[in-house]
Image 1 (spheres, rainbow, N blue to C red):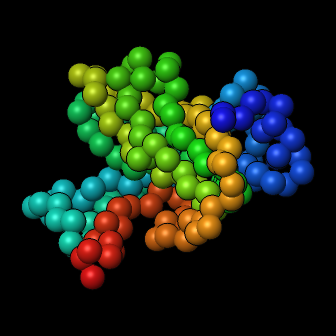
Image 2 (image 1 turned 120 degrees about the vertical axis):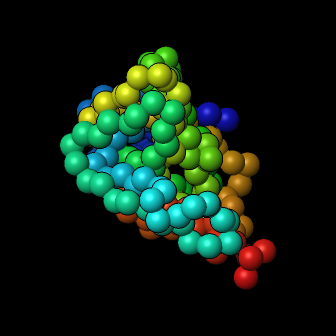
Length: 178
């Protein structure tokens, strides 16, 4: 079941769901808008000749109020909001329609596990033939929260728990590699 604005506001007010900061108009009828943060990671293609999922990936870090994504380019960004998802909820990260219509694809694997705490790292891809300028503080995506049939037995405790800022891939830490 997708949670309504009324339920989301109640959860936030009683501390069951943490969204910080929560902007005045962020709670929508069935979602919560998130805003673009100021931290970005770009794959360090000058120091790597290939991405290998068994090795740590190198990134260039950038922090600022705006960034320009060249055509057909990829980078990691972060939400301004820090969230704490209770163990009986899960969330989907969805790009805003207005953003997708300019050719900016937003993803984060699309999912936030019950028990996750941290800022959301967003994978951004400019599918357009023109550069796209992004400014921090703009609404960039939305979180759609769903009620689970019961609290998770094993809430999220993974390698991205507590992340702040954009966080690069840690796929090299997966158990099948170790």
